[in-house]
Picture 1 (cartoon, rainbow, N blue to C red):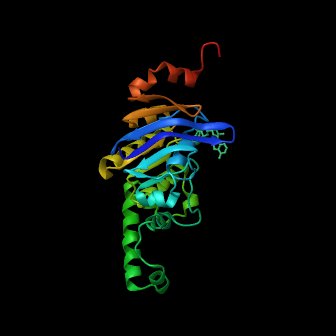
Picture 2: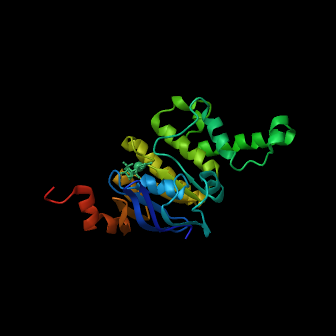
Picture 3: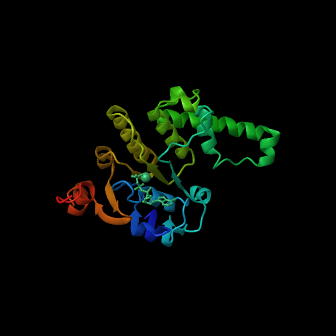
Length: 254
Ligand SMILES: Nc1ncnc2c1ncn2[C@@H]1O[C@H](COP(=O)(O)OP(=O)(O)OP(=O)(O)O)[C@@H](O)[C@H]1O
Ligand SMILES: [Mg+2]
């Protein structure tokens, strides 16, 4: 298992946002994390990526306990996330945004950066080339000189993923990658996410409300409701699960 959560909980005051959730994902898997609004999906992402500390339980990434680590330390160990609200450096170009993503792994020392030594310049050149490759992989290569804030929504999402990929993660967490996209944009993004797994061998966990997209992409689904895991299995098993249907549609009396 590349990522495991063992009975993790998170309380916000009196609210149990995540309650004793066990979770394990295999290397190379695409796992969908679904559930109604407020079920705890983003909180779960915040816990495994280090933005919140669990109230109890353990989180293990590639055999290492990451409970107490900060987001940048977890990113260095290979788990990177994108956000539900796209976070980008709005005033910079697309290319510059992705180049910044590479700085998680850049070897230059601060001194050589200041001196603009030849090794620093060579590294910058290499990074620039790699950024271009990633942008092409994500289908936005022709937009590399655009200012990020001017990109349409769908392309902003693609850029956010490219920035995440620049850190060369083992596990990539995507929070609502296709929400707000039209069906055509969604189909393109679904294919790209599949390509990231197939060609880069990455493990992907995605939170997504677009059922067609998440069912089509995921090897397995995990369902949260009121902070608890209520179902897990193949997409077929999960969509036929009575508790899942009730969680989404309510009971007949409702
Ligand atoms: N920082 C916080 N402080 C207090 N309560 C929070 C915090 N973050 C989340 N919550 C609460 O925890 C619960 C789970 O929220 P979360 O954002 O994880 O849900 P979600 O499944 O991602 O929902 P959505 O599908 O709407 O994005 C909600 O009741 C939310 O109000
Ligand atoms: Mg959320």
